[in-house]
Length: 146
Figure 1 (cartoon, one colour):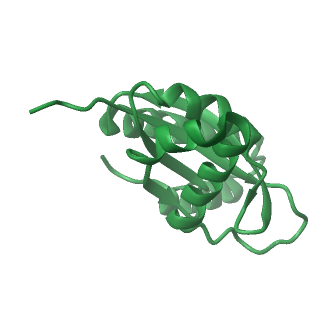
Figure 2 (cartoon, rainbow, N blue to C red; figure 1 turned 180 degrees about the vertical axis):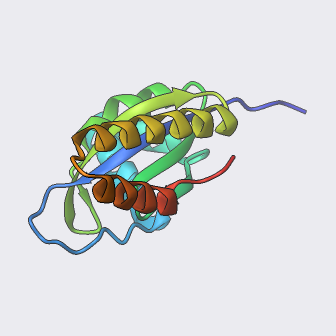
């Protein structure tokens, strides 16, 4: 039996359109958008190479962060085509890759540290104690445990 290695891309999905509606991210829409962009950049070979192991393992609506799994080897094709992703389900977005890891656990550890840094940045901008309590309350709803 052969062991298949995977790579996990942690990406932040930033909406570019001016609507205030939240992104209703569905894993199917993300996967089809990734396949379409990879086919545009690398042709049918690139799309076929990443299609076998491509899966969205984690997608958070509130933080707009997704963890995308791909096979080791073709992950280079995926990494080179992710910056060119501009639409997901007819909404203009920008995909910013923030971490590439070999396991889901490492990605979630990175996300925990990433969220803590975001909380610290938000707390620095607060001027009153009430604002700090509000920030902590909002951020605690979006955080997760490993």
